[in-house]
Image: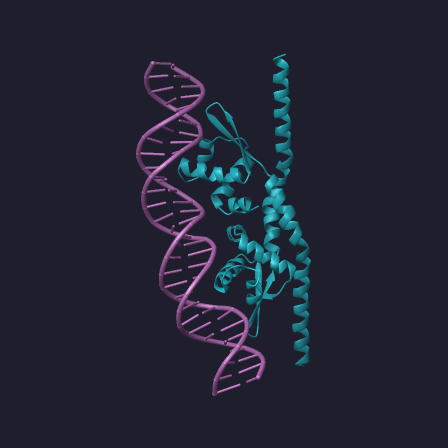
Length: 110
Length: 110
DNA sequence: TTGACATGCAACCATTAGACTGCATATTAT
DNA sequence: ATAATATGCAGTCTAATGGTTGCATGTCAA
């Protein structure tokens, strides 16, 4: 879980996922074309994404193909987003209550 | 968006969100009781969560109450998770295709 | 077989992150 | 008024992060 969040924390890595979203199965050199950094830096980012299993690779001769794997994102959704979602309504109720309180206070001053 | 992902990248900060999930509106000192670090460190974490608007605060006398705000998580869901979700089926199809290929290759060798 | 291409590996460097200590300020209660 | 409580702010330290360069290895094509 920590790996996944850390992997997503960097904008370049999120961009890499975006590129794979646009076209899956790209090679390292292809992915490099979109980013303003050296190939070696991209390699590091990709390996972090691999550790988080957000990217899966397959060798094809001398080329390494990179594929997007969205399963970890599903995990984040299930164990984080959806869990907290029930609170979305709560914060709205809180805000509503506060507004009502302020409204009442204003009336008290009348 | 970057703020949100970076805020979520740290386990202590995710734990803080969890504590607020269990009981909303806790003070700084209350939140400190759950974490193995100094109050000042917790303050920094909370300010990062505030920057990401994952936590909203309200002063009450000398106490600062902290509230969970899940709206940014919704953003992550809408602009990241759900976007990539349509690919979940794709990777399964990819895997299926690969398995079929391997199966065929094995048959070719018969 | 040789040269070009695709990638890997290691060392290095600057910046940031996450922890700490120490002191300051503001509010509450006695 | 004074002491206790709740928080803020500034400076320091270490380790991790994100980038670099240089060289090595493996594969394809002429």
